Image 1 (cartoon, one colour):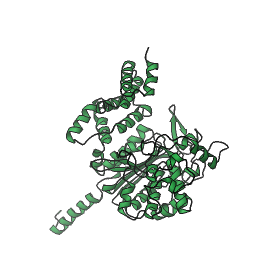
Image 2 (cartoon, rainbow, N blue to C red):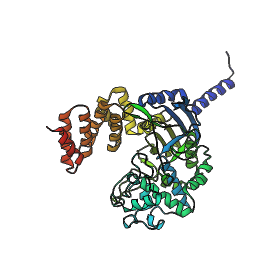
Image 3 (cartoon, helix red, strand yellow):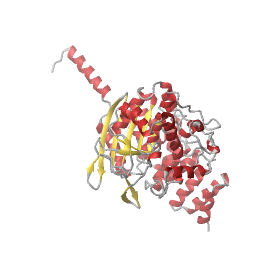
Image 4 (cartoon, rainbow, N blue to C red):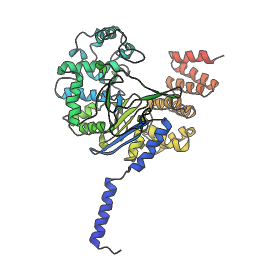
Length: 475
């Protein structure tokens, strides 16, 4: 068919526009989601992708309620567990902008009657989990994490304050629910309102969240999916209690669409007034020696030379990553404890921006080893390092990845190869030898388990676990 020059130019322009506006299709992303659901045995999933202030993908997969054969839809509500902490971080930063809270101020400026050892802990140290406080979970019911029978909140508060601190503030990282319990008290003290009301007025309503709120397994919540876990290879229903007073730490329920709207509102100035406040929110705290902590203010910090991310994860079943410089975010919600969607979010992001997947060392390794085999872990690392001298997976990230494969993922041999890579990268760490020793023992190699536990003890004579394991393993 002949075409005049004007129409030909218009067709070319239209083709280019289609390519720019729709470079990634659902059909391209779906195989990754289906693969992860199959390998991790996840019943149901919701996914949302945010790009340049718009939701560019919103999809649901699988089953929400197995007993009733109800599918996941975009309206299905999921518990988000500790992702709640990101909302608490935003609430605190809003009050910082209002001049009602100072991140560097001690918590005793806002709360009376604290034990002497608690009084110098700063608000930022609470947010970044370096307070050294005793963990409230040690006082709650060990099965449900609700209030013990016969105890009210006032009694629990008294008991919690009687416990010794774990370390001086600013000295050690310890993920701790007490931090966010105190932050909830601070929010209520400076606003004169319940923190649930503060969240609703200043975040949910402003961002247009219609399916987000607080609650646990005891509450009646429309469209809420049950959550599940595997116990001895049997799928069972999960049960969780989040007493109202500590729901600043864990206790919210939401949808991928609502979380996407909230992230858009956050990135585009509707929740925080200034870009400097947003940058402060997402800046990692520091230890007393000046080194950065693992957490920013309510968010996990994931520093990288390029395409840095901040993340929220909850209950090993919900996660969202925000890539601030890219104006990009990915949300994945599941109804399975142990799904760990945070493991594949960077890979999913790579469908939209390949540089993101390559910028995360663990994701780059995982993608390459899936193709070439985990026995090539050290070789692949060396190849990636030659291509990019800044390529360096962190010890803790490799350890977490390997333990998930070994303990819940049914891949002990693959996990061993990652532990061996960690020893190769961090030969002066007692912890990596302790971990690889455990992997050798699980894989049936008692001799190398003993050898590596001994090496761990040489590096850290106080490693009681290594000493205990050696007593079991040595003849």
